[in-house]
Length: 206
Image (cartoon, rainbow, N blue to C red; front, side, top):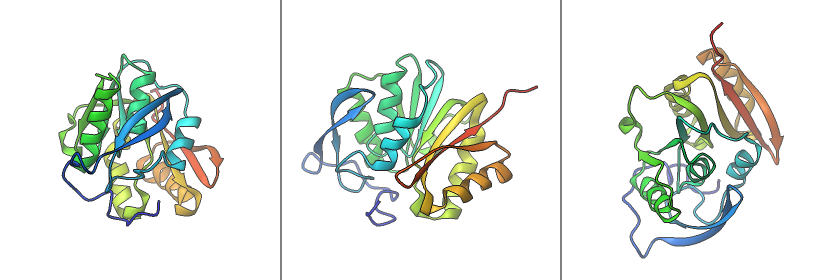
């Protein structure tokens, strides 16, 4: 979280061969090697917040459409795809660099159920059986509100979203805002190392 605020949320071209680097990490219970590059979030390691999210969320649905909102180089999307090979995983980001890295990593790991898309490219009628996200809080609260307002209401009935947000970056405020402004029940699942994992639910009717 030490990179400039617009560094990983400003569009940039796909990384060149000389810019890409290998990263050995652990996802979905497996040791894997992926590609990262500068100008994406946390290119040198799996960041602490995302690691906490992946440790704390329940198993994702085995089928349906799953969303990684703000995919970066792809740790959340890859984990979803590895855990739920029969599901379709949508990895959404605003930068071509992030989308290209996620595509390359999915291909290298043999994950043919990952779809990468800019926000406007994801089909408008999709609803999601799960949403996992380490949202880009440092772009500013109004911008994050816009992102959450756009995507969280697309939870399918009975589905949950899990978000990881730093306690000192307004996790409790975001929890209240989602509940009051979006009308989606939100609760704290856990607190670990200064981060909150929030569960946002769309209850089943009746």
